[in-house]
Length: 443
Image 1: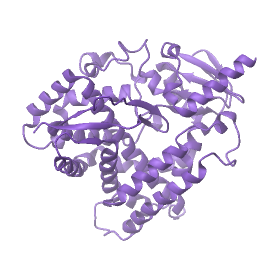
Image 2 (image 1 turned 180 degrees about the vertical axis):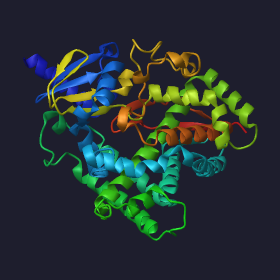
Image 3 (image 1 turned 90 degrees about the vertical axis):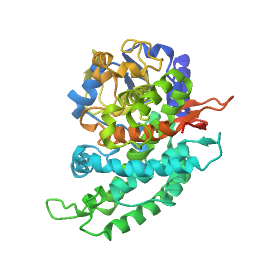
């Protein structure tokens, strides 16, 4: 009994510090794992059929769990990432038109213009300069999402958001033991004051954006912010100010953090695999020559896109999905009591020995024909799946592909000698301690 309790405590401490470091080697072969927490069971669903059951075919029995909501709620409130039920369905319907495929060609122009600004800044640096790329990638993707979704150029406010979110991640990025122990949400969490300070800084920028949106020319092309401002419920009432704020915060988080991290991990992987990097450069040079990338080039950048897909397999920014069972269920033959936590770890699933050949190897070719036809759909879920699949999936893939092409056309990025970069699984999958890369000019 004491040995079992000691194992549980070790598990919880590992999870708190770094989620991806807590998985034993055996988990990469297992399809369903049961973990006994102090107050309930947690099931790690690690097979495609189980994922489909929880996230698609029986998704009505599962809601966002406290493991998710207590980490995100102080920043996102009742936004799409956290809400459940009718509120989630309504807000999803309101915001979905903002990422419709018909908007992507126009969005590409803003993505490219912002990316070219970052490239110009890098060209002004001395040869061989080392850049901690998480910051510029985050700043450019935040600028892009602000212009696309809110019609608002962030400029210097981007730095405020970047540091506020960095502080919030440091204080709230860990899963607190309180959630594992089933303690009530009103009990203060460690580091809460730092998180609240970060949210106040975040909110000052959101207020500037909202004021600008309310003063926008009504003849301007509609943005997501316009959709939120102009929304009226069946009784003719506008969206509550707090909820509007929560959706704006959610769009910022969803729209820039994951894209920035994917770019960083992609160039880290290229630096470790020169043969893949050479093939990327050959494709980009063949398709683009000396001109800038455009929306119409994306279908021809097939290998670059495969590199992005493989990066999302090995280093999925959203590396874990958490649910709570509303009622009793059966998953993969295992009885699941109501109230159980369900964990679906894309980090584990994407590296599962049964569903991937050489699962730890960086092989973009697995996402090219004919190998791509062999992939199991629910074994690869970088954007989630089911009705809660990331609304901005196609916009995100377009953005990361265009920015990847812009950078790779102009630079090689190299990890400086002696630098070790490890994945840190908290709110998202971030590089630890950082992602310093040396810039080498290609042209």
